[in-house]
Length: 147
Image 1 (cartoon, rainbow, N blue to C red):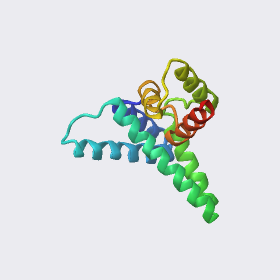
Image 2 (spheres, helix red, strand yellow):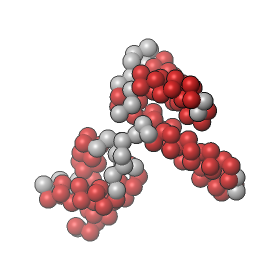
Image 3 (tube, one colour):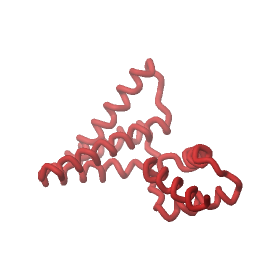
Image 4 (cartoon, helix red, strand yellow):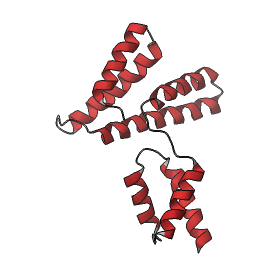
């Protein structure tokens, strides 16, 4: 998981290598971290908070890419895709739909029946490793099929 110090080191390395896209993305992410720290009255951010900010930045790039695609702006699609790939380096690997479904089925076998408790366990054990909307759809479909 990315820490602020690691991000700063990577920024410095990217600056030396003149990787301007990486510099741009990391500066934006570090600015978001600084803004969050200011909102918290100067308190240091934990790894989970930095992960959440990184996910938010990646999600913004994904949405911008979708809008650019609708507008026919291939240059912006490419740019946002590249920026999202840079941010992906700092995110944990995402669970596949099949893996999520298997986790949910195993928890159903353990006695969990409510959507809220399943989603809570998923968040507790696999934070940052899944898309919440997609996970919710999978849990709903499995709960509906199990009646």
